[in-house]
Length: 483
Image (cartoon, rainbow, N blue to C red; front, side):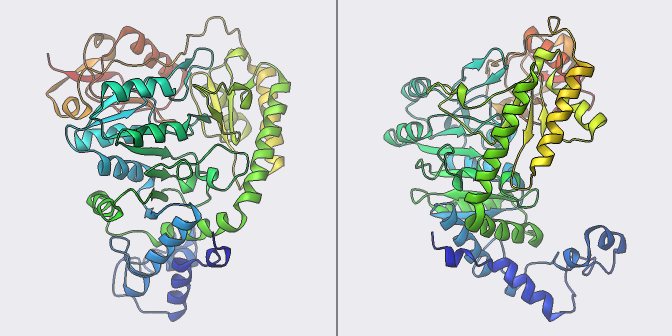
């Protein structure tokens, strides 16, 4: 990587040059640099609204970049060791969906784990591909899915030699990593593409002693959520491609769904954040690793909590672990993760990333400080002292692998009826049910509803998980296939 070239930020520089010209706007957006919406200008600031501009020749166009956006994407590709990089302004959801839609069409098979983000299954609804799930091993205590074990992926490839690609989510929200290099090699040996949902792995490209990143593992495409650990604005993301992929075709796929009115606030944040990571990322993420490891030790010394880390690595279902992820098991103090999440926010003014049935995740990144870590540790000790309960009556929280009965697309568009959740056992679901975050569906279209899954949904609701995906906003009824 050429550090001198990485000091440039072409989109940011073009915006600064544009701002200095004081051009009179007779184009969109209609707030006209904030003059037409003073409340917006007051909220976001004069400088911010003045840079919320439309595509024009000096600023290039994201749908067909030929100048400053093209240059910025080339610098991102170099920094992330890819052949090509696309700036994405629809979140990593858009990046993931473009990746899947580029690799799959109606009737194609895609090999993937079931604990994927909803954006992956949404892509299957859109394109009509058939999922072949490699159900990962589950940690029965933590209640989370682990990584894709190589023998299981090999079995899926042997049984489905006509699959077009293998998708891996690496690392998972909880920090679990699969044997990415071996899975990529397996895909390529059988003429399949290797896709990586790397939403939670931006830092892997800039950290020493961290798990391998997708491009270094030889993956064909990777979706990288720059706004998570990379420091860019919310909703900004990257889609990386290797030389094995026709990037011009991927560009056409992206333009099927991505906006033609890309936000220059998001684009410039990607540009600036890439520069920051290229120049200072290794130092920054070394500090992040140190803070996370310190927090792990302090939390584990409280007792009752389990902040898990590299000790979990077994070379198979947990091939590696991303130590920047501060995932903490809470059930031994008699509280679900979502209950600890709520207490931290409501009683201690601490907002963490999420709480599920058994765990919480505190996202530590380049903007955190050691005093913030100390405050979190103190609050968790306080919660244990004041709110802990008997854990013996808590529901078992093991992740339940659903049974696929038909493709997501067929189920989503099929004739359906709405039934109370308690009456849906034995039916086939035609919509999503998930706790968000993390956005991993409990049920997806085309999957069999069981009593066990119903109990899991009801328990998650009772504990206060934010439920999404159903047509019924109260998640009291489910849409199921007519039979």
